[in-house]
Length: 421
Image (cartoon, helix red, strand yellow):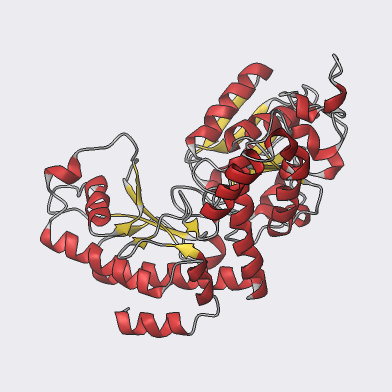
């Protein structure tokens, strides 16, 4: 795709006005929204107001006067429609890892000790598998990790307690059929727990329609809540009142300001709140969700998904044309693709091309994606239709080709690895 064709597509884009709601550095092509979303323009002023007025002037009164205490539920209600959930069912709190610990414990408790096996994928984001290892150890259970999605169905048997999957795989960008896999899990007597970190706000999700049991996800990727933005947690209402989540903190109490000495769980999703909400971080996420209100008026998730698929399709085609031999790890079938494209590079003669070095060279030239080690080493590019366009696709492919042609990636400044890769 040449730059003129890209500009024409961007000019016809019904979502093009949303890009103006973000701060994007001049000369930077940002394709890493699957790791950290861009900064909404309104966020700095809104956080400054929370600091200077609500905290600085309102002081402790702002728990009431500024509604701080209600932020976890209010943000959950704003997220709910984008997750296929209803108001009152989603809570914003803690991190994805902490929330996964809560719901996995709850799911195993629902099995009443009769089943103790958790099934997931080896290619899952490591923290999910680490948390699962901890939970099954506490319950005397076992974690079984599959090598490919096709290996999952045979493991859904009378021993399986929980199927734990990330909806969109962080490495490949492959998207699972949530409804189908949840149904298979239920037919085997297992529960389904979903991590939505790489799908919330970017692909259609229907938690209730899929009859999922629990879901978690983070607020700083496609939702643009800022680095370390709080996560969210959802529980199907059919499980209400059947189990306690394990982190029985004070704000999960039925009446936290009664300061009882004995814990009594709050009804519904409120029980999954543990400690005091991170007000400034939640303020950032709250402001970021205003962008989704604007997107809803321009066609909502259908429009976002259509643009996402068009961007990723154009990028796959561009990479294959410019970098013969590149191995695309992301599914070509749009029904199986999230909003990212991952690929490994062809060999340079008999030698492998250092994917990390190529990514550092890309970043040096103003194209930001990210790198994930593995076999093969993957370059990942996340496309956020809220602010990415076809000109981004064209420039990224062009710069990638130039770096490979010139071998400029093979320089010490690009091969020395930083702490965060």
